[in-house]
Image (cartoon, rainbow, N blue to C red; front, top):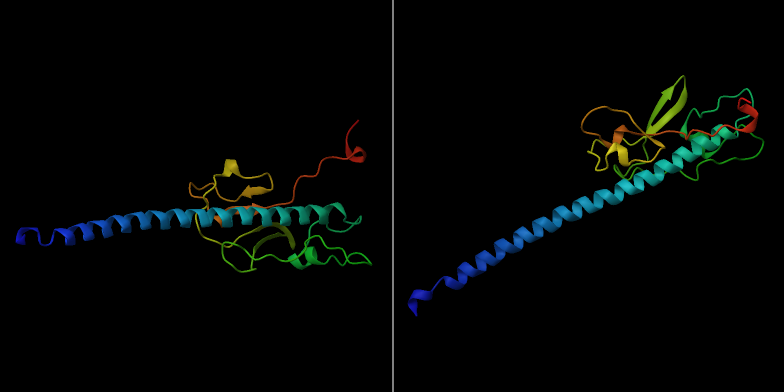
Amino acid sequence: MQRQRGFGYLILIFALAVMGLVLAGFGQSWKISSQREKETELLAIGQQFSAAMTSYQRVTPAGQPNTPASLDELLEDKRFPFTVRHLRRLYRDPMTGQPNWQVDVLDGRIVSISSRSEREALRQPKALPRFVSIASKAEVIRYRDWLFVKQATPPTASNTEP
């Protein structure tokens, strides 16, 4: 009976090691799942920004710039005698948790909006919607490289060639 001492202790250590490996795998899986959810939320918010910039362009009065100078102009367009809202609210960036977006400006006007996150993106550029442009040709694409741009508006009957 004395020879079997410590055998139960070895089984307990082995069981704890196996549980640790299983929990580590579960934690990694949860981390990837959480990042995918945030990525999906980022794309939904990016679609809102894209639609807002497209709306801003579509209702622009003749002779005025057709892109906003700031995100505030998407929230409340003061070019009209009544309030026009292209964007419901300024969303927080799901990747950083802050409402501070990177805004790319050309000649004082917004060209694109992107996250400030340095995390590596899970989705490949080919799997992204049309309203997302990629800023980098690097092998590793980060969320800051996803540029949300206005959607190309289809030509109307008044501006097409016969």
